[in-house]
Each structure stands twice: as structure tokens, then as C-alpha cells.
Length: 321
Ligand code: ATP
Ligand code: MG
View 1 (tube, protein in one colour):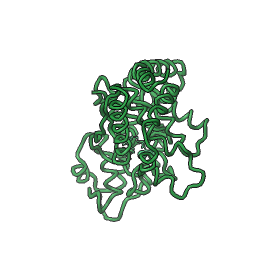
View 2 (cartoon, helix red, strand yellow):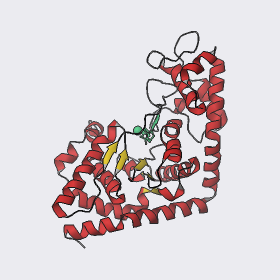
View 3 (cartoon, rainbow, N blue to C red):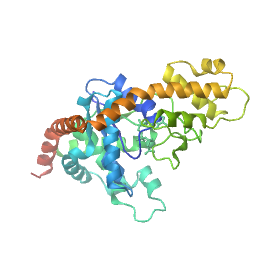
View 4 (cartoon, rainbow, N blue to C red):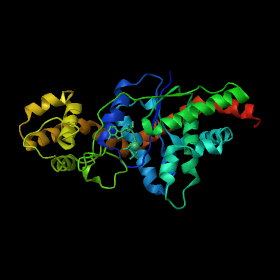
């Protein structure tokens, strides 16, 4: 089994990404699992090149700093040549109607002027990400499962039309973890692409900033803290955070904190301690550009080599090269 997970550098890495994805990538992964920074996927709408480069570097550094095996990570654009070639082959295997049916495309393109063609075709690039590496399992949320389904269809169709080259992948549900909510708007999840950063704790925020954001977190009415995610999402989010950082039960924690102020201080302390080693290691890696470059180059070579035989076979079978 080869499991492949990507994170798009669409903004700075936040506490939700850390607790819901990266921390798990570091602790629960199998030896063959692969993790990549999907920077090419951040170009389907208007983007700033310098910012994207910096965010991709930050994302890679945070991944490694969190403890994800450096032998298992790579940056997508470092294998752009291989992915570009395979994307073309897969575009020649995919119908226009199949791409245009993607719900995300329909939703994101709606009402927009100058929609990039890549917004339509990026699920095919995603299929190339998956098929090039021979991934069998792709943990994705509901919003991406249709894209994995497309990768599955394309793998099957290519194999039966031209010859057996690709592992047929399947979408797997990631283990359910706490969905971290935006601190300022606790009915929404914490997001890289949030319009307002006031309620988003970034992994690289200074401890003082983290404390300030948590102190200002919106807590719904009620005189004492109680765990009730539906009716009191704000305070429940804080209890979930404390639970995720301490390995405790949020209901029990609610009983231990009689006041909002004391609870917020405890959450701030726990989050700061949870993020401290990641932040410190990330800063060290970002300062040591040679080490980060070494990890990145080695990752790119491994990712390209891993896919090389599939790409050459596919080219040959499709009548090219
Ligand atoms: P974007 O706003 O661009 O979609 P995002 O913050 O939702 O960014 P993704 O790149 O979509 O981040 O997701 C990366 C990983 O982080 C995924 O595994 C996703 O499930 C996880 N993740 C994202 N946001 C949260 C959150 N608030 N709580 C828990 N896990 C999260
Ligand atoms: Mg998202």
C-alpha cells in the first residue's frame, strides 16, 4: 500500500493543518507513504509567484520540522516535467465532459471572469500526481473524493486501452480528527485561505500572537465553559484544542475550568507548547537553506525516479517516444 497526501501552499500553515494532518503524517505514517507540497495546484486562480515560492518553502520546512520523514517528502513543481508529460497523456485519456462535470470546477468557476483553463484541468494533474507515484490510497475529504474517482477512472481506462501501467487508486477517508474551527468565527473551519487572519493561529506565529488570538477567541454566551459543539461552538472549539494538545477528554476538561479566562490561558499555554518545537525547528531549517535544499533535491530525485518507469511505459504504449 502506498498512501499519498498533498498540502497546497495556498496560505501559511495553521493549527488546523498541524493537528488535523501534519502531526498525524509524522506519527502514524507507514514506511511507503508519500507527502508532497502541491504548489502547482495553487496556480489555478490568480497568484503571486514570489509569495507562492515562499509558501511552498515554508510548507516543506514545517512538514519536516513536524517530524514527517524527510525521505518521504517532495515538492510537486520539482517534478513538473514528469507531471506535465503524464498530465498530457491523461488529458488524452479523459473526456471534456468528465472534467467539466467536476463539482469543484463548477463551483469555483461560477460567476468568475477569466477562469484559468487549469481550473478545469487540475483534477487531471491530480490524477498524474497519484498515478505517477503508483499510489494506491489517497486520503481526502469529501470535497476531493470526486477527483480521486476521476484518477481511478483514468487509470482503469488507460490500462484497458493501452496496457497495464497504473495502480488503480482509491479514495480513503482520513482518520476522523478534530476539525479545528476559526477562533473568530467558530462555525467555520480554520482555513489557510480565510479572509481574516484574526481567528487563525499559524504554526509560525510568535507565542505572544498565539496568546492574543486565543484570548480574543469568540465564546458564545453561557456563564461557565461547557462542551456542546452544536450549541456552543466557540467554547467547544477551545476545549477541543486543549484536548488535542493534552490528549484529554474535552468533557472532562470543561468541568475543570470554571471560568473563560482561566480556560483561555490554559489553551494558550497548551497550544504554544504544542507548536514551540515545530516553530523552532522550522525557523532553524529556513535559516539553514543548504539543509532544506538538500532535502528538497533528494525528494525530487526520488519522486522522479519512482515514477520514471510508469511514465516511459505510458509514453511508449500510447504511441509516443
Ligand atoms: P484551503 O483554505 O486553501 O483549502 P486548508 O486550510 O483547508 O486550505 P488544505 O490544504 O485544504 O488546508 O488541507 C490540508 C490538510 O489539513 C488536509 O488534510 C485537511 O484535512 C487538514 N485541515 C485543513 N483545515 C483543517 C482544520 N481546520 N482542522 C483540521 N484539519 C484541517
Ligand atoms: Mg481546504
